[in-house]
Image (cartoon, rainbow, N blue to C red; front, side, top):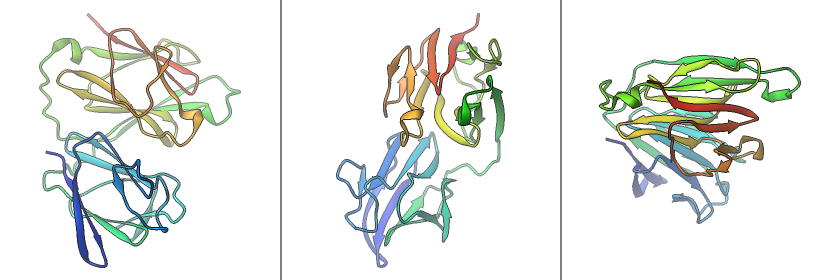
Length: 229
């Protein structure tokens, strides 16, 4: 089951937070899931993405940075016992069931020149302890097909528990495989250039279930989600 965070200040435990949502934000402003009222903490400081039993921490371009076990991080897969320092507070990650395997794979999809920093999109899988035998055959047959650019027509079977889509070197959105279907969620909303559209509609911070022939648009790249026969 997903882990939890124990919040402490000067070695005194203040509270704990179960990681029961796919995306949890941390910051000084009241609209965060974990609100830390300290001037050393940015308004929206960091966020956690939880996929099944695994959690990934990302710094949201905070002023004072985010640290894990004393090291500054941008993005970091959490392990049981990791200590996150945000401002003057500590958050200890507790999850004895977290996966430790390294099952990473990156596929680069090159697009036509002339698009500046958006010339490449990466599909990246993340590790997970998901039991491989998901029940519905139509979910197991799901694929992504690139609709435009130099890679038009290229297909990627969605056989992994999670797949990340975005610019090379920077994850933008992630597709997670669940027993009842595939769900897409935005990883980085810090820039308007990272707007994610599904069938022409912005999905914001929601996790949205994908349906056959849905069209995903990210950084001008169009990708179709479909279930093969």
